[in-house]
Image (tube, rainbow, N blue to C red; front, side, top):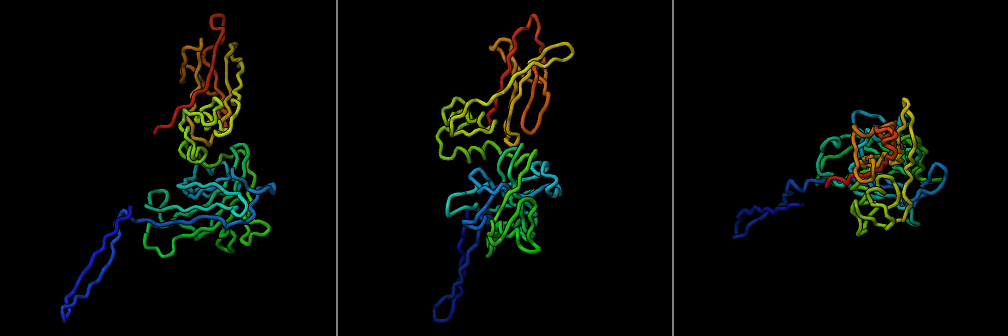
Amino acid sequence: MNLLRTLARCVPRRGGFAACIFWILLGASASANRINWFSTLNRTNLTSSGQPMDSQFRFELGVFINGFTPTSANTSQWAANWRSPQRTRYNPNPGVRQFNEEFIVEDNDAPYTVGAAAYLWGFRGNAASGEWILIRNITWTWPAPNPFNPTPPSWNAADAATPVSGVVILGSVHASGSPHLMQSAAVTNSAPPTTSWAVWQADELEGVTLNGPNDDADGDGISNLIEFAFGTTPKTANTPVATPASILELSGQRYLQITVPRRVDHAATLVIEVSPDLGNWYSGTSHTQVVSNTLTSLVVRDLTPLSSTATKRFMRVRAIPPTP
């Protein structure tokens, strides 16, 4: 909240007049600064294959932590070292074709300290295969929350093509917009920025009444939370994601195991449960074991072997709702 106080000091003058000086004090809670970050309006922006960027592209403003320096050779490490206070979506509509956002700087809590190198990261896809662009300009440094700044930072993607100061880590940028302004690069086996439930909910379920984790926005029998965990679309009916079951033979014993495809960049808590009768369900290290955990799938096996006394075993996937 902006707190404004108007103060006045009046000095008596001859003839009964008083000269008054008025000034305004801006309360501490009003300390803020704005970062305008955007791409030039209505420019051609392409993927690595030459297709126009679509509405699945997201752009984030952020910084890298722990002294990490991103390069085209260490993309698999970017997400773990990335912190972002704001995300926006790319608008591909004719006459727009840009991203455009404003971030209000209210403090300099780590890692958004004064002078920190700021980046713009655009991305689409999942950890198996995606399209990324990462850019900055050496003049893009995190500002202090100065409400009196006459020229708040204005960071245009085109600045990454500025001679000497522009930096393109991945993808390409042409300030003139010809033959394109931005073009992303293909990336594999690298997770994009982490998406929390709250960010996904605001992005994918904007304006939807049934937007809670246990709601089913599209009426396909799959909760919004499961759609989030598996990376499916919550407003378009989907068939359930396949979670193949198989038998693992180990030391002469046979165990049931399940493969769960998931979005590792979606911060969902998945619990794999086992049951002998579909009535009582159990989870945890006493009942299950992780066989593999990759960027695209989670494989978990039952710790109770199939036998003459345990001829039936069942497994299921449960997602835990986020903490409010």
